[in-house]
Image (tube, rainbow, N blue to C red; front, side, top):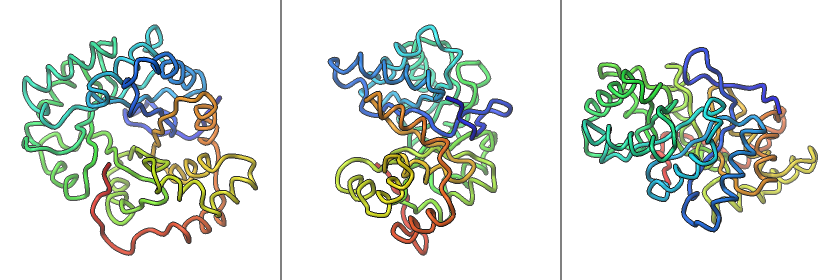
Length: 285
């Protein structure tokens, strides 16, 4: 499947605006085969970006990814994340090496600080730059950073090398639109949207069963989840990384990348899921 819309985390190397998430993968050995197959199917369908983290199942998700990409590393844009308490000096080097071993590769395309901890940001940037210069990672970025965090990062030596910010974003959680997303666009930092279909529970049900979302989906003969994904990636500079294990969900996600919502459809969604009128705390799960 050809996905026409793309984003560049590394200059000159575009990747599709739909990737594959792995949160909760690797937690149950009985699901391993299905999880590996889902990721491989996604690669077959043109979804090369796979996002994981050392936190997910304490390395279990990285092991699933490693199995899925074995023999296909050159087809993958591989993203992983480091714990905040590993985010400097020798601890980061060791964490990166452990992730690489679980992933079965000698480099990552993008390595993210999972969230801010107690380690000074300057030390984290220095360690990430050392990894980049050594070839262990090709680029680095952050996750769960709000505008003030990004401004602080930009004030540091090499801080402007940040290639991405991964944050929660979906139609029912639009706080980043107030100032973080405009900041990212001004500084040409791509945004990776995690939980683009909301994180389970009541909020996810409210999003995917809302009459407006369902009506638009029915009119287009697609699923509500596909409409919700199309909404997240409606503008340039945003990549969504939904997790899927069921083969049909993987296929639906890939197909959603080429859905372009009309101005009227966007207006209808925005009326029932409005952006906040002012700054709100960054939504994190």
